[in-house]
Length: 297
Ligand code: ADP
Ligand code: MG
Picture 1: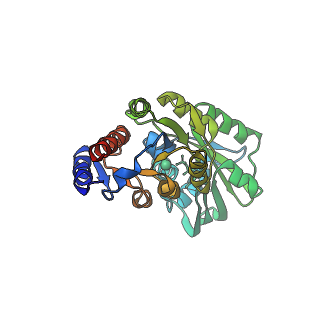
Picture 2 (picture 1 turned 90 degrees about the vertical axis):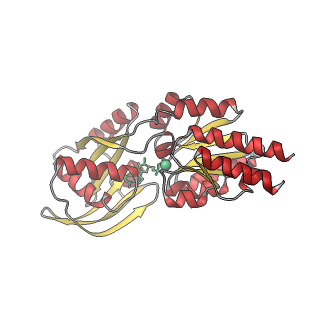
């Protein structure tokens, strides 16, 4: 590889809005045949909004939202941002948080102390609550299924050993994602949608942008394993992601691409960054790398 051609490629990348970690990165694009796309914040905007608060029978919806938002205030997750913004519009000051823990890819937990008393609160996947002995009752389970069937994400809220409500958040597919998927296909890449979110939501996003292969419900460590498995099956994998939970998979991928709108962890782990967070630029990046490599040969 002539260093000059790679440097020219790097400069051209900057013009396109692609920050390339080093000239040698362009070599990694050789033979890429699969592109794994994270859902939240990559294919979607990740700017979620809170659309519904469903209390369990007998529970106060405002309390459900207040306690959940108090905890989520300490989380960077797009769901957390939506819950906190939603609470700012609907309820008053949030109670104090005495302890906080994030369970990456699953939810958040902690102790919240307010006028209503002190509670051990858990917010996240229904499976997380079920594992801690707080399964959703039939009403909440029904609300969760209805939300997911509509392509929305349902977040469970529980405290003091019982599930108390479900928060429904919705995300928006980026307007450029469907075109980006078409362009990636035209380059001969097979797109795969990868998410920690549930299968119904994932399927509805995949249908909207034209992706067939969906891997849903994975844990952050599972994302890394998915990339490894694809590689073990002989595929050369590019991965595009934005979250803390994508970092390990981005580092493992043959070519890791971070959304410039994403977290520092993702940007540090990736080989290149799509500065404007436009997924179509992922196709530009692959095209640029191929062109640069063919100049070298
Ligand atoms: P993605 O892979 O689509 O970026 P994540 O792996 O970050 O999604 O999250 C997967 C699931 O874990 C979410 O859909 C949500 O149910 C739950 N979750 C993760 N973090 C939080 C949080 N801070 N608050 C509530 N739920 C969360
Ligand atoms: Mg994400």
